[in-house]
Amino acid sequence: MPAFSQPIFDMQRVFRVVLDAMSRPARLCRLPVFPQSVPDGLSPVLADLALTLCDGESPLWLSPGLRKDETTTWLRFHCGCPIVEEADKAAFALVADASELPPLSAFAQGVPAYPDRSATVLLAGLAFDAGTRFRGSGPGICGESTFTCTLPEDFAERWRENASGFPLGVDMLLCGADGVAGLPRTTRLERLPQESASCM
Image (cartoon, rainbow, N blue to C red; front, side, top):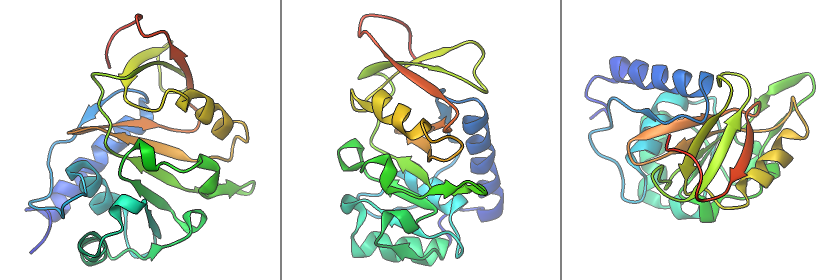
């Protein structure tokens, strides 16, 4: 049984949302459709993105909370992707929650001639109505954008380190309960005091 009820159409719809999220960063984009069933521990949003982005030519790394037989079997069957043990060998990384996020330098950074050979990290377990306040700026953002997210409080510092080797570095998709926010390496982040600004 396919994971999506209309696989080609549904993947196209999800992919359009991903493109929108990456072209207009730091803004939550709601996903229009979810798989019919997913293994325990794999969020519907992560499953959505894996089905849409991963294939037999995109090695996948899983954080410890996702390394379960049911999950790896589901991903291999529906996506056909090889699952790797070393984070720096992965084209995509699925991370169950922020507590399992390794240093971003652990992932493939690309090389000067091919910066696009870096990893895209999909981080789940986030909420966009609580947590730390951030200000985002850079390409795709008109002026600046403020948002709340349950990312670690030191995430802005981690992100600056990721951007320090530009054009190398990872890109990220931040996954909430029913949507995703893009964070390309070109986006600048600043942590804001808790009392300021508005929601995504």
